[in-house]
Image (cartoon, rainbow over all chains, first blue to last red; front, side):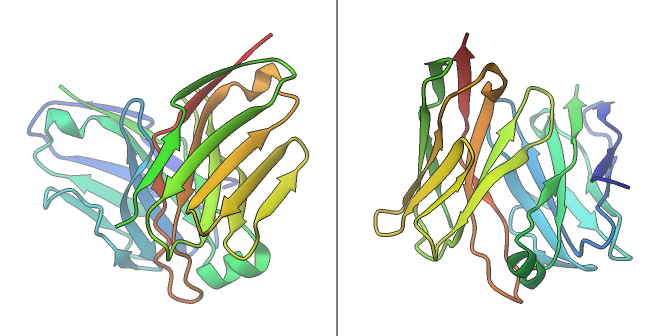
Length: 119
Length: 116
């Protein structure tokens, strides 16, 4: 597609349930990032993939959060036993590799996000 | 880890006047500083960025300045227009060629309102 696509756009779930959020990056982008944005705050880093592997998962808040990118393109963020504090907009972004970015001066493109509400 | 502070949190400017938003960062290894504009309910969009090997960059009405010694950088918008109204976020990261580690640390945002 033309941009980063995230589905669903909105998700309402009950406390304790499991949810999956999907991100389709821009074709050819090897780097993929997940961020979480709470109301009135800046995006907060969760995890970064370079290809299929998680290069940096230091932002995942606890072991209820997990993300995969098995084929190096689509990524799924998984949240187990959801809590009300997990409610936020989950943003995905993709970009070319660091070297490509510097040579081509491109940036990380964000998706529209998934608004997760835990009730 | 990196800590980015952003001021002011809200800013109202008369149309046609200039707006300045300031950020400071803590990690001296940070070398990439983008600015994002986010309209209500929409995705953050990059408007300008600067790397640590330059002190200033300009793109039409938008400019960014970087002071590595003081560890602060600023966004300048001149001749403001109503469509400039949005939330602006600064960010910082360490961009290592070939190694990644590009997580962005964002500031808390500035809500800019342009008064017609």
